[in-house]
Length: 345
Ligand SMILES: [Zn+2]
Ligand SMILES: [Zn+2]
Image 1 (spheres, rainbow, N blue to C red):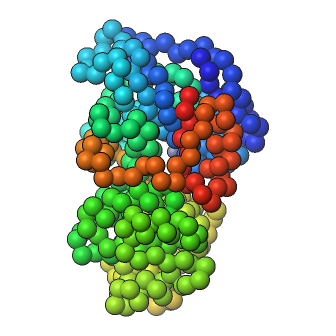
Image 2 (image 1 turned 120 degrees about the vertical axis):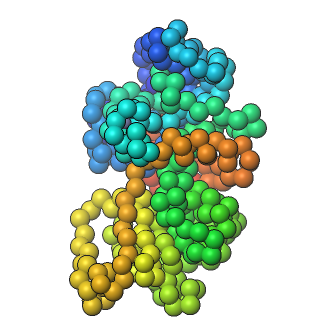
Image 3 (image 1 turned 90 degrees about the horizontal axis):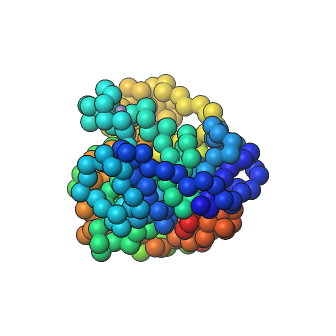
């Protein structure tokens, strides 16, 4: 089969023929039809995230068609079914058994992260990873759910905003616009912050109540102004810069929470000292939360939300063939027009 393999940082991925994987008795063979290019894949390509094998097939946000089901698999799924392939926990460990399966140690060992992934015509998965894509939903939506929508959904669930709350989103990209649409379904007032007018315009189309271009306006002052001086209940940071994470903290009201999704990669200082400008301790009681991945229950709920047809997956999406994967990585890294890229093996 054809696959795109990583050899070493900054070298183009090599599209080449490799042996087709075989499904064991407890596994399912999936014919991959779409796989998202994640920002993490761009970072892997540049060596900012270590790729454990060389060569290795990357790609961890896939959807496809079931090609073959192992002889011992007990499932209602059948060959020909369209499925999203989601990284799920082991089902056995402390985290999996206490409802926090997104924290399971098995998740970072998944397809395209620690072993061969899905920039390929076929991949083998465990039946627990497969979520049938509803008939009325395009297969591509399953791939986007398996990555960005799942993470965005987990982030807004961690924010626990309720009707009447205001949530600020930093970054109108792939995850930010999915989070925005989900928050609007909950009736939450949303403020989107970005530096690109085009992306802010898309956010407006998706129902953002306010947009702020932080090149032109101070987002902290503007959020305060829009919330009667109190600040927002929660801020979700999708960009991964120290400066935007600090702005996210500063635009909160007392008792608010910041959800860090963007993962700031460079070291930065944050003082918790009371009675300073930022003054987090004693005076503000804010929560700073990091998040990782999403739960199997959230994936299940998302399939129902997808079936309701209320989420837009097409706006801002670029599509490339497997042969064009290096162009896809380039688009993901630099494009102003597209914030999401799907590879079609
Ligand atoms: Zn990812
Ligand atoms: Zn587990």
